[in-house]
Image 1 (tube, helix red, strand yellow):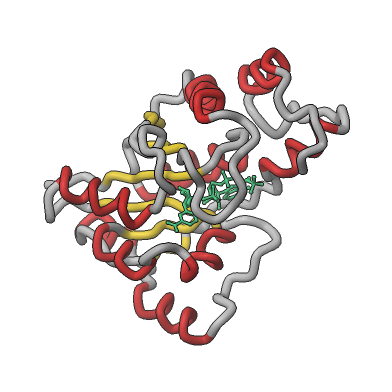
Image 2 (cartoon, protein in one colour):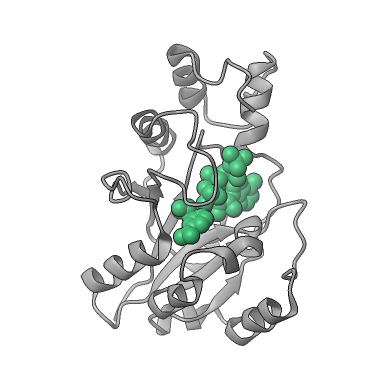
Amino acid sequence: MHSLQALYGGTFDPVHYGHLKPVEILANQIGLQRVTIMPNNVPPHRPQPEATPAQRKEMLALAIADKPLFVLDERELRRDSPSYTAQTLQAWRSEQGPEKPLAFIIGQDSLLNFPTWYQYQTILDNSHLIVCRRPGYPLTMKEEQHQLWLEQHLTYQVEDLHNLPAGKIYLAETPWFDISATLIRQRLQQGLPCDEMLPLPVLSYIQQQGLYQKSSN
Ligand SMILES: Nc1ncnc2c1ncn2[C@@H]1O[C@H](COP(=O)(O)OP(=O)(O)OP(=O)(O)O)[C@@H](O)[C@H]1O
Ligand SMILES: O=C(O)c1ccc[n+]([C@@H]2O[C@H](COP(=O)([O-])O)[C@@H](O)[C@H]2O)c1
């Protein structure tokens, strides 16, 4: 019996409840024992984050310290080249063997941009995609060919994620959390409170490090 392993990649500049809460709920819904959080080093499709890799890693460590569901994976932090998910998942698949069910978790906004990712079609050869809902983003792909691609891979059966090694896309029914790292960076820069948006130890660390104070957004 192979248990489903899930990887959750992101820039996490900073990590917030919009990352953590949907995935905790998802884990309960579909029976995930463990979620591996993987911060990228060089995000492929966006400017370099404001916080350093070490600071983003430390914020994640603080955020998950009391959450045994999550473990941290530093593999992308150790690479100086762009953190292409296709390459990371290829390596992960080689380590885990061909039978193990593997999944990569993303938010709805990432699904919409997914066809622009490096070698995106190979990602489903190595893992499933699990998509969490996010307010403000449509449920359908911008281009018809990508909508067709999505529909070809969609499953509504949680069992498929546990029984097949890869290849399915599952749109999870997680609640909306209207939080983004951009909003947090902007609010901090304006001196507005963010207590409801991210764990207190992360907020204290941000203040202690003097992060997100200049107007870089
Ligand atoms: N509020 C949210 N609800 C659901 N998924 C989210 C949410 N925020 C982020 N995600 C997902 O988490 C992953 C990592 O996101 P990321 O670290 O870029 O956070 P972000 O808040 O989108 O950052 P930024 O505002 O800097 O672009 C992505 O797959 C993204 O879709
Ligand atoms: O491989 C790619 O081309 C690619 C393009 C955009 C994003 N990703 C990955 O998707 C995850 C979420 O990205 P982001 O930018 O929303 O933090 C993170 O692990 C990124 O490395 C990957």
